Length: 260
Image (tube, rainbow, N blue to C red; front, side, top):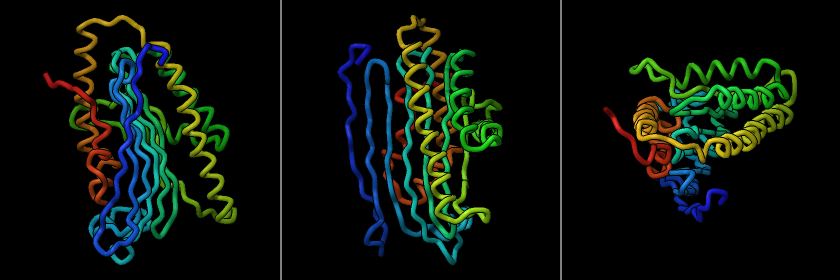
């Protein structure tokens, strides 16, 4: 609205199908295309059922003999019209198999990096982590650096952020309910940190002048982003392996990209 756009989210709901499962769940995909957010998508889903035996062996707490799961999550990816505004990804999730755990994170993906933006993004998540555990930020920052990497290109997808998984709700030092509440509170704060920092970065850069070369840089960078999400991204693989909605799974792909 601040940029004079009347764009709004368009919502599509979907239901998952699984043979023999009366309640496999589903989700809602929100998609907006406008003057500032060239494409931004938000997925909210809760799905339940059984993993295929081979895939079950790769999932924490699941196995061929115990393939049942429930997964609920929120995922957001924004590709921006102005190449000086960073693209961004944020996800939070909760899964149950034979175990129960939280995961999530956020990472900043600027085609044209600014140290100021990178530093503020990391500072915001550093503060969110520090409020819960003094070791979280360094651990989860390294995890993001390791995860958001494109091996066949030898480059990182962006300038990092945090990434965590298997934050389990079983802690011998506290009862199960307390561990769940603690990890839920942290995961909620990850989402709140994102809502705090990203709008500020958008407002800072959305009116910046840019050149044709800046746009070309953005489109080539988007190609790298697409490569990561199609080849390495865990969420993409999870969605495909569990019969998710294809449009929702591929929502993260940029609206336009080039390879040169």
